[in-house]
Amino acid sequence: MADWYTNFANSGVGTTITKQLGLPRPAVLRRYEPGQPLLPGPAVLGSAGEGRLRDTLTRVLKDAGVTVQSAVVADGSTDGEKPAAVLLDATGVTGPAQLAAAHDFLAPAVKRLRASGRVLVLADPPSATDSPATAAARQAFDGLVRSIGKELLDGSTANLVYVPEGAETSLASPVRFFLSGRSAYVDGQVLTLSAADVPTGEDAEKPLAGKVAVVTGAARGIGASIAQVMARDGAHVVAVDIPVAGEALAGVANEIGGTALQLDITAADAPQRLVEHLRERHGGVDVVVHNAGITRDKLLVNMDAARWNSVMAVNLQAQLDITEALLAADGLLRENARVVCVSSQSGIAGNRGQTNYAASKAGVIGMVRAWAPEFAGRGATINAVAPGFIVTEMTAKMPFGTREVGSRINSLSQGGLPVDVAETIAWLSQPGSAGVNGQTVRVCGQSMLGA
Image (cartoon, rainbow, N blue to C red):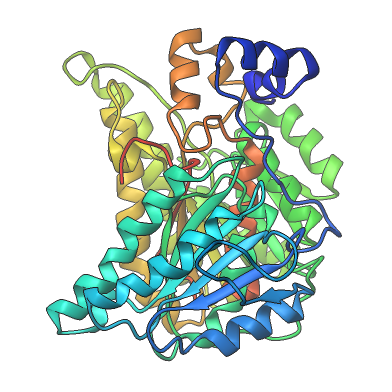
């Protein structure tokens, strides 16, 4: 599946027609391909405040083969070629007056940003201070970055990472993700890191090598794409779906060299059956992706109990039951385990006719947040991914007008692809993402709906 209008607008005929009619032309996004460099050009690095992360950022960039520029002057000129990324280390900002330094660096640097560029700001968390002035300045970066994301052109994105003191070792993986093509449809997002023991020696091409990963709802759509990306990154994937989808499930598993497990995750014995399968066939599990989900849409006043209960059972209760069973099974979740739960933009912004779906997906976010401390105590993580409008076979069946509105009301003016969700989940599953815990990352192109 692909965004038809983006493809058309960037074709020979489409480019001419959109120019003549004054229509928008969404950019072809820079998406990840194995073997490609982290960035297609240099990065500009600046600071506001004391900038305690500057040395760490420089090392991460240089280790990834990125040339680091710093000579940005007020008239917008730089030494060398246009940057592919602009990074601002805003740690140490203590009051609103220091925000001027952020403006003075970002304005000329962003002006020169090339297509599909990246803007990444790193700051101290607002919650880590008792000073109202300091908290105000730190929170200001939230509004600044989200606004930059709405102003950028040509497929560029802007994101913010809050880095508490002590969490510096957790920084490399998020920086690489937000600068890479993996984050093509992640825009205007805010992530807060935590201190963690981050494993070293991760294989950049196969970060999941040797890992066993479970993906529910893997027979089609986003689930199938998750399974494919996880396998590409080196994992052995246990693809799970309901028996009626058995043929499609087997096709996915065979294509990626994984294992197919037919299982109704809402069945009373499903958690134990999954535990037994993982213990007997694989000796444990490293990654669990709760992707399975359904919709049964109706306005609240017209919704019967069956519609409500079925959505809650698949989208929320099954995730709770299976995760509880995995935690209770002694030694089954291996060291540095990762659990990633699929929520939705609807769970953040709500959606007309989806009270059941939105409630279930909001519940996923609450579950992840509550479980994060226990997972951290085990040296593991649990996070959520909230997709926005993703172009799939299901969305292709929507009425044309509804589909087009849903896919255009974001900063990138296009629908995302299943691979965009899969790349974010695969990143959260990596050993290097140990410092990302209890977070929800929206994969929505910075949708105009919700936070």
